[in-house]
Amino acid sequence: MLEYIRQIRLLWTAAPHEIRALNGLRAFAILAVYLFHVAVALDLPEPVAVVCSNLWSGVDLFFVLSGYLIYRILRGEYKKTGDIALGSFYLKRVLRIFPAYYFFLAWAFFQARAQLGEMPDPELLNGLARDYYEQLSARLPETFWDAVYLSNYVHGFHLHTWSLAIEEQFYLVFPWLVLLLSRSQPRARLLALVALYAAPGVLRGLHVMAEPVLAEEAQVEFVRFIGHAFHTRADALLAGVLVYELQDSGMRLLPAVRIAITALLAVPMLALAHYDLWMDSPFLLWALKFNFLNLGFAWMLYLAIEGAGLFSGLLSQRALVPIARLSYAMYLWHILLSGSAVGTALAAGQPPWMGALRGLGMTALAATLSYVFIESPFLVWKRRFQRESRQQAEAD
Image 1 (cartoon, rainbow, N blue to C red):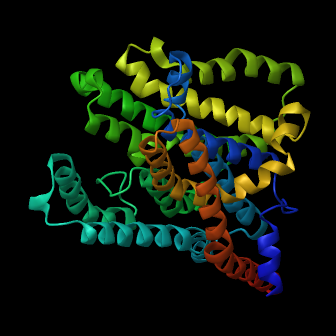
Image 2: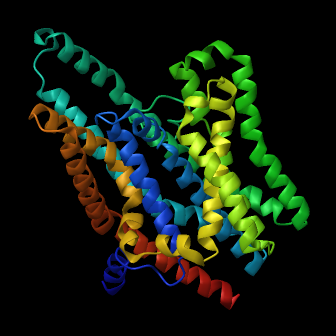
């Protein structure tokens, strides 16, 4: 019980081993994604609307963070023990990810089933209601693809689970690669990681050149393939991996160099990617834009983990810890709850921003309940397992 209480308290406080600035990056990522999904209902001026329409980039920031943290864990274990306990790694990922995810899928599935059951005979419905009924009936079985983490390749029931599928696929294959690369020389390992980082961008470029008409028209299936497939999006995760590899190699940059890279490269790349009206070339829009995002975010991550300066200090504020801690569950629930809140506001004649704020509060509440009652018991088991594994390793 005491361990459970300690786990709940971590909702408000950073753990001693955490890099505190990463909490700020997580908080920014989830708030960006939330704004992206509600902005379509808000009457925003064009420049702001264009930027908000690109705030799906918060997903890329999550990818960069995940790549960094997972590689840090795996390389840290290898440097300490000379091996990576793959079974232990997978078990810890299961305990962290699966409980909240499958609870969300089950809730959404049975809620949709109940909604279908409450509807009258489809023959009695008018056109829009009948279309909704038929689409919901047809798409509900697609929850299967969400459940097996393949919704980035096959249509799932949910719009946002594709990114979780990419991360899960990364967790599945990357530890084996780390185990292999850890036995090589640092220079060879760095070159291999750079080559792996470049590969998805090359694949995107080749696909754009192979399907220029689809790229020009931004056909839905083309966009899904470019933006959702593991082999065309893994470079965002590998950008985070490269940050740790360079950090671990002892790379340190003078303050003047950091300022120059930030001002001349990172900020312009992020700004151009978020205000992409200039990207009238499909190659720029679908091949290079993702690199602008993940490299820009990777640099921001590097600045954050250096642990000094105003930027890192702002990201390390304690007020951002709860948002970061709840970010996973908020991501799971935000589309379902924000859509309901904005729709209710519009139906009641209220401005959509009121619904968006209400949806944010509902999302935060659902995420808090998820953290306290669903995630925390499994996180306690995870911490206990980590402690026992560490004690066993020390005994051996």
